[in-house]
Image 1 (cartoon, rainbow, N blue to C red):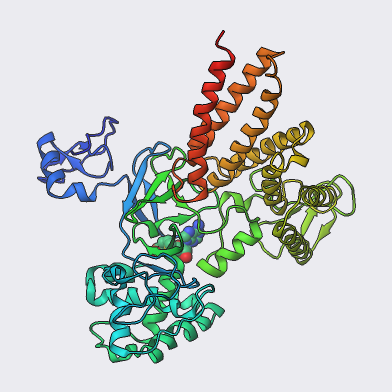
Image 2: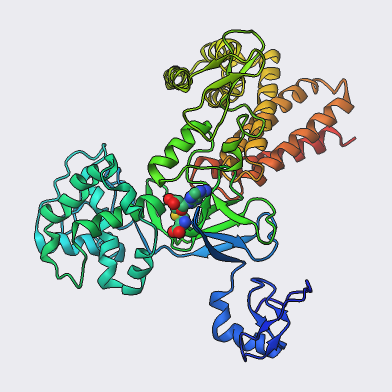
Length: 541
Ligand SMILES: C[S@@+](CC[C@H](N)C(=O)[O-])C[C@H]1O[C@@H](n2cnc3c(N)ncnc32)[C@H](O)[C@@H]1O
């Protein structure tokens, strides 16, 4: 059914998309197509517009290249885009997986034609597997995989090969793929380029003899292969499947620009369509963004990652603000005075000094990098086999002397600690549960400041909301034996626990059902039903 016409009246007129007459009405969904009358809209919807109607348009600027803006106001949760992948395949570094269904393999079955490990005969038939099967079959080079527990370098060629094979299989898709940004010139001579030369370009050309295939079927020049690996690195999306992670290229999604406070989130359907939703309300004309890097990294780590993997320096609102939206996610303590904090004097200049907010002492950026590296190493070591006393000690020591309590290295440490209180009976007493509650509150405040729409922090916030409800409930349960001493307080706690579970479910509802976050959402739903029953039994008479 076609979308309605736009009720928002403005004075803009255009040409009817159906008959070419002067028109004042617009399609209510995209606000781009004009119509002179309802019948024209209906006819145009059926003939063309149904496949083209979308609430955004692609624009271009010298700073961003192509990017996307909303053509009408979008509500949080609204679907902006649904799209099939052009091509899908293993990530560059992966343990051996089936090239048909992407489950882990143990080597007990090999494709009868090409000898790539698969799950069984049924997976030989998947069209995804066709390109490497044809190449393997024609050339007969051995697929020499013996260890099935560690990443294997053979898989590095599969995704680029599948991209190159589109030339013959689907020239239109190949054209779409080649229209994506590869940053070929920026990549030339870089470490990634040199590594790809060995592991992908030489492998495809010399081991799989790609040049022997007709040029009209497959591009096998060094430049073409590098170009395709650049397109993958710059544009591919990661899909988490049950047993593995794979990459997919989605050409419309690839037009989204990066922001460190993205206004969209995305998920994948069972048939691997990407579904992009607004994470917050987006106004007409606003840029629509996603996030290419890690939201829980500090500014210099994020910008460095974007510079080396996506070839641009981020200048977004969060990167430009030395306090990172008031969270102090990268802030250090001043070693000269005991009250000041050190912030970058110019966060968009990676070489800038850092300056104390209280005594104006400055330090060099190298010293900041050094402090972060050392703290990162310490945190990583403790998180290998964390205990409550170790985590408490680490946070107390560093929050008191080295970094701001919200510093990103301590933030992930807190996320582990808030889950540990209450699990181990030694750390489940009243005092520990109070600490758990406070930790969850502080953690969620930072989550909300960094990512108001929970575009990326949903898994973290979902866990914190769930743990917070556990802390509140543990207090509530203490007051029920043999009968509530303070029914008003008890009621308040039960209400709070219910609200936290509801929020947890809302935050996690789009998470994949086969991943821990999706499973936690299910547990929270069950807990909420049980809690309602308990509440009814408590206050029934
Ligand atoms: C996935 S592509 C996005 C589409 C791309 N602009 C195009 O025209 O094909 C990623 C590339 O877009 C550019 N880009 C994306 N977000 C940006 C941002 N916030 N600032 C500057 N450049 C950005 C960078 O060149 C980046 O490597």
